[in-house]
Length: 134
Image (tube, rainbow, N blue to C red; front, top):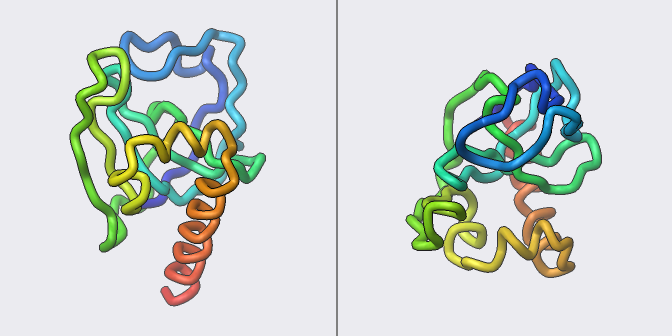
């Protein structure tokens, strides 16, 4: 799955009733017009989020409203699971196996834990090879 950034501020997409919490002054670390591979998705607080490696090249969850989908194909090895974390947290997640199978992996990514970042880096490398082959 590939998305193109169409907005990068909270003001541009407005306050959302569901999903990630942010303000009008929030600037997301993505660049308008740039295409990004999606490494995972989640239903968080009843809103859709995408796991993207933005301009900082670190993995972060972003509201899907920042993007348009340019290639909706999903990698063959992606998995899906529901989560029972309550209405204000994660209800579902899909992506690479470690993201889905390990309930702590997504938080470990955001906390920049070395083991989680190593797993993520392997996913980035695999996706890079996948795109080179096209």
